[in-house]
Image (cartoon, rainbow, N blue to C red; front, top):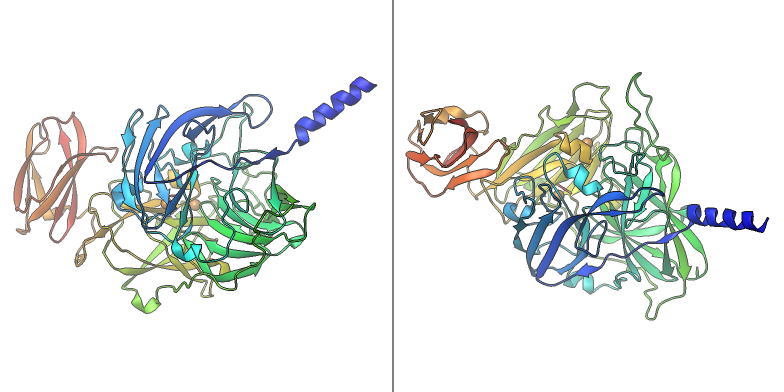
Length: 565
Ligand code: C2O
Ligand code: CU
Ligand code: CU
């Protein structure tokens, strides 16, 4: 009898044990080193799950970078995963060559050395891989980490900022594991919830005003965050900075890639327990994680038991106050003024499309086009302000993300966005049949060879081609012609070629710059400052195969294909 009681309690301890969430170690200073490696960890009973992480202290995720506005960062990013990767600083305003998009590959065993100045407002950003076709696999296996930026405006406010004590980073991921406990990056039956990498998570919070920094780091699921009993809280910031003033609410919806900072007042609650929850029953149908849709017969199973229900995410035990607790909520924060619509020089329409109305798992497209590393979708001159009108014609909601900029949401179906969405943003969720207009300005960085990305942050949609790219051109660039296919402006001969080919403009424009790319989009040759109508280029050292030549002239950017034999 005694024995069976013992076995029973051991069993329940295994099943119901709460894990205290780890608070990721921090890195600060100018020199930041991240080494990505393969690892494993125990998530569910049974086999260990194969993971990816940054730096040896981590089996999953990576360190939190704590950086100051205007400081320099000299990073060393080393790849030890046995596969190609890239590292993107999501939300940071950096030059294209430092952005870590799909064109900036880090081969296995190699290091990448980006160097940049922090120009963003105080907020929480994050880093993750961005290698074409493998972003979902690598990020979902754990390759991601946080970036907290501090600045003097934020420092002047009375806000909790003791990292891990009253200022808590929370990386929420929901994943699908197969029967061997291995990650299924494209699985849509995600039901394993991890907070900072652990299941059944709990944390102790002091009985005072506490700041939670939330990242939805999932591949697909949207969370509708709230607390037990609809306890109210204040949203103080979103993706790219603090709001004008705290917004009192009971919900904050975050789609993949979005962040929010909230203040919750736990004063007087010592000894109580509350849960951070997702009120997913309130999400619209079509938002992944929301109520499930009727499925066409024969479709693969796509629903998770968490879809459309309200569930607990993190147990919060309220403990004694710290010394010098923050106990008040500031009345105002940082003045934020959206770009005026009258400043916009251009409106672009981006419609989210699919092969048919019935498609729920992709592929999805922008304006019917799948991503092509060799096609630049948009070019804009430096300093231009643009409105992008996003319309979702599919059955599924898509979190739309733009690199380089922080934008403002102008309206949703013509109505002002909710107050917690009125600050600096870099991801916005667009729901089926909804029109969302965003306004942004392209400043500081130009590059006519490495583009910035815009894409859906549902990682399987991104990997399947729901991505496009843009180049910010030097100020005054006339933007004469759209780019791809505009091949009549130059001639290339001989083609096929085995050593030297000639490229010549037809209308006696001067060629500035020529780049040669292989089929994977890797730049294999670049010649700058040519300033001639005709130039011979020796490619005898390249291996046999097809290449793309990109010629930039004073008026245009022209792509041509060439065969090396
Ligand atoms: Cu979170 Cu293109 O990235
Ligand atoms: Cu990004
Ligand atoms: Cu999508």
